[in-house]
Length: 151
Image (cartoon, rainbow, N blue to C red; front, side):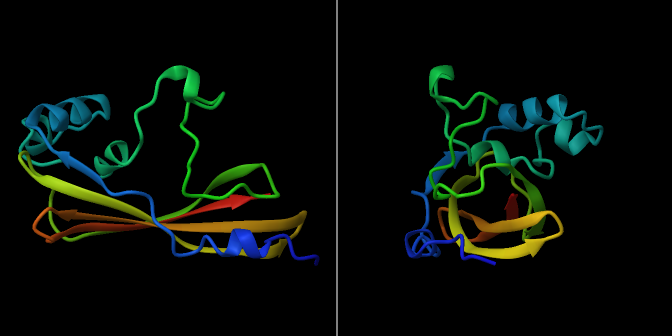
């Protein structure tokens, strides 16, 4: 199999996006809870954020004309890949403590790895990112490892 990943692409491994700093509000938690169909009172009352709440905070807010055709912002952390069809791979989240109203969070995304494999129908490129959420005081909140697969 011919090597698809150039030295320039591989050199991006270990790079991180600028940290995002947010203050969590009770209303943010309540809106997310309602929009995702949560039923637990602790989520609906905004006392604690449901799982995956952090995902929206880690996305850049852009005007519609700066979004891709699918409505998502271009991920500047991931370098342009030679294979263009990208799909979700795996996601593994370790929660250290709940997110609560008033929390001041620091969210950092890092490009953990990029590698290729031979698939049944051709080459595949795996892109692994790590999202780390801590409080401003440095207390761990969660770590999430996700992978995308390009083919």
